[in-house]
Length: 354
Image (tube, rainbow, N blue to C red; front, side, top):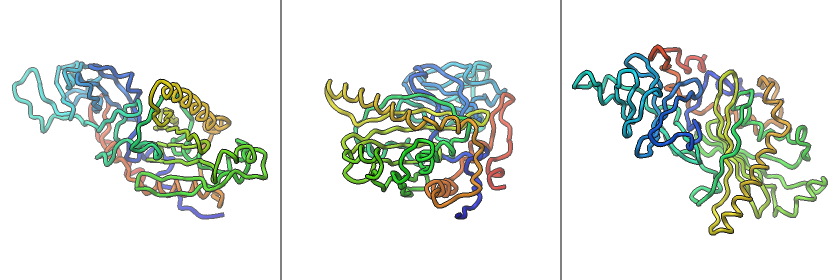
Protein backbone atom coordinates (compact mmCIF):
# COMPACT_ATOMS: atom_id res chain seq x y z
CA UNK A 1 0.00 0.00 0.00
CA UNK A 2 1.03 3.61 -0.49
CA UNK A 3 -0.39 6.74 1.04
CA UNK A 4 -2.03 9.65 -0.74
CA UNK A 5 -3.55 12.70 0.88
CA UNK A 6 -7.34 12.68 0.68
CA UNK A 7 -8.06 14.79 -2.42
CA UNK A 8 -9.82 18.07 -1.70
CA UNK A 9 -10.87 18.74 -5.32
CA UNK A 10 -10.68 15.51 -7.29
CA UNK A 11 -14.07 14.13 -8.42
CA UNK A 12 -15.92 16.74 -6.33
CA UNK A 13 -18.73 18.51 -8.13
CA UNK A 14 -18.35 21.58 -5.94
CA UNK A 15 -14.91 22.23 -7.50
CA UNK A 16 -14.40 23.43 -11.08
CA UNK A 17 -10.84 23.94 -12.31
CA UNK A 18 -10.04 26.95 -14.49
CA UNK A 19 -9.70 26.06 -18.17
CA UNK A 20 -11.34 25.69 -21.58
CA UNK A 21 -14.59 23.70 -21.64
CA UNK A 22 -16.61 22.75 -24.70
CA UNK A 23 -20.06 24.32 -25.05
CA UNK A 24 -21.57 23.09 -28.33
CA UNK A 25 -20.77 22.15 -31.89
CA UNK A 26 -19.90 25.32 -33.80
CA UNK A 27 -22.18 24.33 -36.69
CA UNK A 28 -25.21 24.62 -34.39
CA UNK A 29 -24.74 28.38 -33.97
CA UNK A 30 -25.56 30.26 -37.17
CA UNK A 31 -24.60 33.84 -37.88
CA UNK A 32 -27.00 36.29 -36.21
CA UNK A 33 -28.46 33.64 -33.88
CA UNK A 34 -28.43 33.25 -30.09
CA UNK A 35 -28.87 30.06 -28.07
CA UNK A 36 -29.38 29.29 -24.36
CA UNK A 37 -26.89 26.83 -22.89
CA UNK A 38 -26.07 25.58 -19.42
CA UNK A 39 -22.44 24.72 -18.76
CA UNK A 40 -21.63 23.07 -15.44
CA UNK A 41 -24.56 24.68 -13.69
CA UNK A 42 -24.18 28.14 -15.15
CA UNK A 43 -26.74 29.52 -17.62
CA UNK A 44 -25.30 31.36 -20.62
CA UNK A 45 -26.54 33.11 -23.73
CA UNK A 46 -24.24 32.24 -26.64
CA UNK A 47 -24.59 34.21 -29.86
CA UNK A 48 -22.78 34.64 -33.16
CA UNK A 49 -22.61 38.23 -34.33
CA UNK A 50 -23.11 39.36 -37.90
CA UNK A 51 -19.32 39.42 -38.33
CA UNK A 52 -19.15 35.75 -37.29
CA UNK A 53 -17.73 36.46 -33.83
CA UNK A 54 -19.02 34.19 -31.06
CA UNK A 55 -19.86 35.77 -27.68
CA UNK A 56 -20.77 34.14 -24.35
CA UNK A 57 -22.69 36.20 -21.79
CA UNK A 58 -24.25 35.29 -18.48
CA UNK A 59 -27.85 34.45 -19.33
CA UNK A 60 -29.95 36.87 -17.32
CA UNK A 61 -30.38 40.57 -17.94
CA UNK A 62 -29.21 42.71 -14.98
CA UNK A 63 -32.37 44.82 -15.31
CA UNK A 64 -35.18 42.37 -14.43
CA UNK A 65 -33.63 38.96 -15.08
CA UNK A 66 -35.04 38.16 -18.53
CA UNK A 67 -33.10 35.43 -20.32
CA UNK A 68 -30.94 37.12 -22.94
CA UNK A 69 -31.27 34.15 -25.31
CA UNK A 70 -34.87 35.32 -25.84
CA UNK A 71 -33.47 38.46 -27.44
CA UNK A 72 -32.05 39.20 -30.87
CA UNK A 73 -28.60 39.72 -32.34
CA UNK A 74 -27.97 43.25 -33.59
CA UNK A 75 -24.70 43.43 -35.55
CA UNK A 76 -22.24 42.09 -32.94
CA UNK A 77 -24.38 43.02 -29.94
CA UNK A 78 -27.38 41.42 -28.24
CA UNK A 79 -30.68 43.08 -27.37
CA UNK A 80 -32.77 41.81 -24.51
CA UNK A 81 -36.29 40.85 -25.59
CA UNK A 82 -38.01 42.35 -22.53
CA UNK A 83 -36.99 46.03 -22.59
CA UNK A 84 -34.62 46.12 -25.57
CA UNK A 85 -31.51 46.90 -23.57
CA UNK A 86 -28.44 46.29 -25.75
CA UNK A 87 -25.22 44.60 -24.61
CA UNK A 88 -21.98 44.48 -26.57
CA UNK A 89 -19.53 41.56 -26.75
CA UNK A 90 -17.87 42.66 -23.49
CA UNK A 91 -21.23 42.55 -21.69
CA UNK A 92 -21.43 46.35 -21.39
CA UNK A 93 -24.87 47.90 -21.76
CA UNK A 94 -24.66 50.36 -24.67
CA UNK A 95 -28.28 51.36 -25.17
CA UNK A 96 -31.45 51.75 -23.10
CA UNK A 97 -34.28 52.92 -25.38
CA UNK A 98 -36.12 54.96 -22.75
CA UNK A 99 -33.12 57.08 -21.70
CA UNK A 100 -30.43 58.94 -23.58
CA UNK A 101 -27.40 58.17 -21.44
CA UNK A 102 -26.27 54.77 -20.22
CA UNK A 103 -24.11 54.48 -17.12
CA UNK A 104 -22.25 51.50 -18.60
CA UNK A 105 -19.84 51.16 -15.69
CA UNK A 106 -22.77 50.11 -13.52
CA UNK A 107 -24.90 48.19 -16.03
CA UNK A 108 -23.04 45.16 -17.24
CA UNK A 109 -23.47 41.41 -17.67
CA UNK A 110 -20.53 39.02 -17.33
CA UNK A 111 -18.80 38.12 -20.61
CA UNK A 112 -16.62 35.00 -20.86
CA UNK A 113 -13.64 34.36 -23.18
CA UNK A 114 -14.69 32.26 -26.19
CA UNK A 115 -12.81 30.31 -28.85
CA UNK A 116 -14.03 28.43 -31.89
CA UNK A 117 -11.68 25.52 -32.54
CA UNK A 118 -11.75 21.83 -33.53
CA UNK A 119 -15.35 22.27 -34.69
CA UNK A 120 -16.52 23.28 -31.22
CA UNK A 121 -17.27 26.46 -29.29
CA UNK A 122 -15.24 26.66 -26.08
CA UNK A 123 -15.63 28.93 -23.05
CA UNK A 124 -12.83 29.77 -20.66
CA UNK A 125 -14.08 29.03 -17.16
CA UNK A 126 -12.15 31.26 -14.81
CA UNK A 127 -10.99 34.83 -14.44
CA UNK A 128 -8.52 35.14 -17.34
CA UNK A 129 -7.56 32.88 -20.23
CA UNK A 130 -3.82 32.21 -19.98
CA UNK A 131 -3.49 30.15 -23.17
CA UNK A 132 -5.44 29.00 -26.22
CA UNK A 133 -7.52 25.84 -26.55
CA UNK A 134 -5.00 22.96 -26.39
CA UNK A 135 -3.95 20.90 -29.41
CA UNK A 136 -2.72 17.34 -29.91
CA UNK A 137 0.98 17.47 -28.87
CA UNK A 138 2.23 15.65 -31.99
CA UNK A 139 0.29 18.03 -34.26
CA UNK A 140 1.20 21.35 -32.63
CA UNK A 141 2.26 23.80 -35.32
CA UNK A 142 1.29 21.40 -38.12
CA UNK A 143 -1.64 21.41 -40.51
CA UNK A 144 -4.23 18.81 -39.54
CA UNK A 145 -7.70 17.58 -40.40
CA UNK A 146 -10.33 16.70 -37.82
CA UNK A 147 -13.76 15.19 -37.56
CA UNK A 148 -16.27 15.43 -34.74
CA UNK A 149 -17.09 12.04 -33.32
CA UNK A 150 -19.81 10.98 -30.96
CA UNK A 151 -21.25 12.96 -28.08
CA UNK A 152 -21.80 10.83 -24.99
CA UNK A 153 -22.98 10.89 -21.40
CA UNK A 154 -21.41 8.95 -18.52
CA UNK A 155 -22.83 8.48 -15.04
CA UNK A 156 -19.82 9.75 -13.09
CA UNK A 157 -17.48 12.71 -12.68
CA UNK A 158 -15.20 13.77 -15.60
CA UNK A 159 -12.10 13.15 -13.47
CA UNK A 160 -13.07 9.50 -13.09
CA UNK A 161 -13.52 9.10 -16.85
CA UNK A 162 -10.08 10.62 -17.40
CA UNK A 163 -8.18 8.31 -15.05
CA UNK A 164 -9.57 5.28 -16.84
CA UNK A 165 -7.21 5.70 -19.79
CA UNK A 166 -4.10 5.62 -17.56
CA UNK A 167 -5.33 2.85 -15.25
CA UNK A 168 -2.89 0.10 -16.28
CA UNK A 169 -4.64 -2.57 -14.19
CA UNK A 170 -7.98 -2.29 -15.95
CA UNK A 171 -6.44 -2.87 -19.39
CA UNK A 172 -5.48 -6.32 -18.13
CA UNK A 173 -8.66 -7.12 -16.19
CA UNK A 174 -11.31 -5.52 -18.42
CA UNK A 175 -9.72 -5.43 -21.88
CA UNK A 176 -7.71 -8.65 -21.50
CA UNK A 177 -4.43 -7.13 -22.66
CA UNK A 178 -1.15 -8.61 -21.37
CA UNK A 179 -0.27 -7.09 -18.01
CA UNK A 180 3.19 -5.88 -19.11
CA UNK A 181 2.07 -4.06 -22.24
CA UNK A 182 1.82 -0.65 -20.52
CA UNK A 183 4.14 1.22 -18.18
CA UNK A 184 2.98 4.81 -18.06
CA UNK A 185 5.46 7.52 -17.09
CA UNK A 186 4.16 10.97 -16.05
CA UNK A 187 5.55 14.30 -17.24
CA UNK A 188 4.27 17.56 -15.76
CA UNK A 189 4.25 20.15 -18.56
CA UNK A 190 2.75 23.08 -16.68
CA UNK A 191 0.17 23.90 -14.01
CA UNK A 192 -2.70 22.87 -16.30
CA UNK A 193 -1.16 20.02 -18.31
CA UNK A 194 0.26 16.61 -17.44
CA UNK A 195 1.29 13.94 -19.95
CA UNK A 196 1.68 10.18 -19.68
CA UNK A 197 3.82 8.19 -22.09
CA UNK A 198 4.07 4.42 -22.32
CA UNK A 199 7.61 3.06 -21.84
CA UNK A 200 6.87 -0.64 -22.32
CA UNK A 201 7.31 -2.74 -25.45
CA UNK A 202 4.83 -5.33 -26.65
CA UNK A 203 5.68 -8.54 -24.74
CA UNK A 204 7.08 -11.38 -26.88
CA UNK A 205 5.72 -13.91 -24.38
CA UNK A 206 2.10 -13.14 -25.31
CA UNK A 207 0.41 -13.97 -28.63
CA UNK A 208 -0.90 -10.43 -29.05
CA UNK A 209 2.54 -9.02 -28.34
CA UNK A 210 4.11 -11.22 -30.99
CA UNK A 211 1.57 -10.05 -33.58
CA UNK A 212 2.02 -6.31 -33.02
CA UNK A 213 5.77 -6.17 -32.23
CA UNK A 214 6.81 -5.87 -35.92
CA UNK A 215 4.87 -2.61 -36.19
CA UNK A 216 6.89 -0.89 -33.43
CA UNK A 217 10.59 -0.14 -33.40
CA UNK A 218 10.73 -0.03 -29.64
CA UNK A 219 7.96 0.90 -27.18
CA UNK A 220 4.25 0.55 -27.86
CA UNK A 221 2.89 3.98 -28.82
CA UNK A 222 0.34 5.07 -26.27
CA UNK A 223 0.46 8.60 -24.84
CA UNK A 224 -2.02 10.91 -23.15
CA UNK A 225 -2.06 14.63 -22.59
CA UNK A 226 -4.47 15.82 -19.87
CA UNK A 227 -5.64 19.38 -19.31
CA UNK A 228 -7.80 20.61 -16.39
CA UNK A 229 -8.62 17.03 -15.42
CA UNK A 230 -11.38 17.03 -18.05
CA UNK A 231 -9.73 17.37 -21.48
CA UNK A 232 -7.80 14.32 -22.65
CA UNK A 233 -5.83 13.63 -25.83
CA UNK A 234 -4.78 10.11 -26.78
CA UNK A 235 -2.15 9.15 -29.37
CA UNK A 236 -1.84 5.48 -30.30
CA UNK A 237 -1.16 3.20 -33.26
CA UNK A 238 1.82 1.68 -35.08
CA UNK A 239 4.96 3.65 -35.85
CA UNK A 240 3.92 4.29 -39.46
CA UNK A 241 0.47 5.68 -38.56
CA UNK A 242 -0.28 7.48 -35.31
CA UNK A 243 -3.97 8.02 -34.51
CA UNK A 244 -5.15 10.93 -32.38
CA UNK A 245 -8.34 11.38 -30.34
CA UNK A 246 -9.47 14.23 -28.09
CA UNK A 247 -12.05 13.63 -25.37
CA UNK A 248 -13.61 16.93 -24.24
CA UNK A 249 -15.53 16.47 -21.00
CA UNK A 250 -17.55 18.64 -18.63
CA UNK A 251 -19.79 18.11 -15.64
CA UNK A 252 -23.39 17.42 -16.63
CA UNK A 253 -26.62 17.50 -14.63
CA UNK A 254 -27.53 14.84 -12.08
CA UNK A 255 -24.00 13.54 -11.41
CA UNK A 256 -23.15 12.94 -15.06
CA UNK A 257 -20.35 13.72 -17.52
CA UNK A 258 -21.13 15.20 -20.93
CA UNK A 259 -18.48 14.43 -23.53
CA UNK A 260 -17.55 15.12 -27.13
CA UNK A 261 -15.05 13.05 -29.14
CA UNK A 262 -12.84 14.72 -31.79
CA UNK A 263 -10.70 12.73 -34.24
CA UNK A 264 -7.48 14.13 -35.75
CA UNK A 265 -4.93 13.29 -38.41
CA UNK A 266 -2.07 15.13 -40.08
CA UNK A 267 -3.19 16.99 -43.21
CA UNK A 268 -2.39 15.32 -46.53
CA UNK A 269 -2.62 17.24 -49.79
CA UNK A 270 -4.51 16.48 -52.97
CA UNK A 271 -7.48 14.24 -53.76
CA UNK A 272 -5.62 11.12 -52.67
CA UNK A 273 -4.63 12.84 -49.44
CA UNK A 274 -8.23 13.86 -48.81
CA UNK A 275 -9.42 10.28 -49.34
CA UNK A 276 -6.62 8.91 -47.16
CA UNK A 277 -7.55 11.26 -44.35
CA UNK A 278 -11.21 10.24 -44.52
CA UNK A 279 -10.14 6.61 -44.15
CA UNK A 280 -7.72 7.38 -41.31
CA UNK A 281 -10.32 9.42 -39.43
CA UNK A 282 -12.76 6.53 -39.80
CA UNK A 283 -10.15 4.14 -38.45
CA UNK A 284 -9.45 6.55 -35.59
CA UNK A 285 -13.15 6.55 -34.75
CA UNK A 286 -13.07 2.77 -34.44
CA UNK A 287 -10.05 3.06 -32.17
CA UNK A 288 -11.79 5.70 -30.05
CA UNK A 289 -14.72 3.34 -29.62
CA UNK A 290 -12.38 0.77 -28.13
CA UNK A 291 -11.83 2.96 -25.08
CA UNK A 292 -15.52 2.66 -24.22
CA UNK A 293 -15.84 -1.11 -24.68
CA UNK A 294 -16.36 -2.78 -21.34
CA UNK A 295 -16.03 0.46 -19.34
CA UNK A 296 -19.43 2.06 -19.89
CA UNK A 297 -21.26 -0.01 -17.29
CA UNK A 298 -18.60 0.90 -14.72
CA UNK A 299 -19.05 4.59 -15.45
CA UNK A 300 -22.80 4.28 -14.95
CA UNK A 301 -22.55 2.81 -11.44
CA UNK A 302 -19.20 3.82 -9.92
CA UNK A 303 -19.06 6.02 -6.81
CA UNK A 304 -15.39 6.94 -6.83
CA UNK A 305 -13.62 6.78 -3.47
CA UNK A 306 -9.88 6.06 -3.62
CA UNK A 307 -9.53 4.36 -0.22
CA UNK A 308 -6.76 1.82 -0.85
CA UNK A 309 -4.20 2.95 -3.47
CA UNK A 310 -1.43 0.47 -4.36
CA UNK A 311 1.84 0.85 -6.32
CA UNK A 312 0.10 -0.23 -9.54
CA UNK A 313 -2.02 2.93 -9.24
CA UNK A 314 1.02 5.20 -9.62
CA UNK A 315 -0.25 6.90 -12.81
CA UNK A 316 -3.67 7.59 -11.30
CA UNK A 317 -2.02 8.97 -8.17
CA UNK A 318 0.23 11.34 -10.17
CA UNK A 319 -2.79 12.54 -12.12
CA UNK A 320 -4.69 13.29 -8.90
CA UNK A 321 -1.71 15.06 -7.33
CA UNK A 322 -1.31 17.28 -10.38
CA UNK A 323 -5.03 18.01 -10.48
CA UNK A 324 -5.05 19.06 -6.81
CA UNK A 325 -2.57 21.87 -7.60
CA UNK A 326 -4.61 23.38 -10.44
CA UNK A 327 -6.33 26.75 -9.86
CA UNK A 328 -10.06 26.75 -9.26
CA UNK A 329 -12.51 28.87 -11.25
CA UNK A 330 -13.97 30.72 -8.27
CA UNK A 331 -15.57 33.28 -10.64
CA UNK A 332 -17.69 30.57 -12.23
CA UNK A 333 -19.67 29.97 -9.05
CA UNK A 334 -19.14 33.10 -6.98
CA UNK A 335 -22.15 34.90 -8.48
CA UNK A 336 -24.87 32.61 -9.73
CA UNK A 337 -27.24 33.98 -12.37
CA UNK A 338 -30.82 32.86 -11.87
CA UNK A 339 -34.17 33.68 -13.39
CA UNK A 340 -34.67 36.07 -10.47
CA UNK A 341 -31.48 37.92 -11.42
CA UNK A 342 -27.92 37.87 -10.04
CA UNK A 343 -27.70 36.59 -6.49
CA UNK A 344 -24.64 36.03 -4.36
CA UNK A 345 -24.29 32.39 -3.33
CA UNK A 346 -21.75 30.22 -1.59
CA UNK A 347 -18.40 30.44 -3.39
CA UNK A 348 -17.01 27.08 -4.47
CA UNK A 349 -13.76 28.05 -2.72
CA UNK A 350 -15.57 27.82 0.61
CA UNK A 351 -16.78 24.33 -0.30
CA UNK A 352 -13.46 23.08 -1.69
CA UNK A 353 -11.39 24.46 1.17
CA UNK A 354 -13.70 23.03 3.84
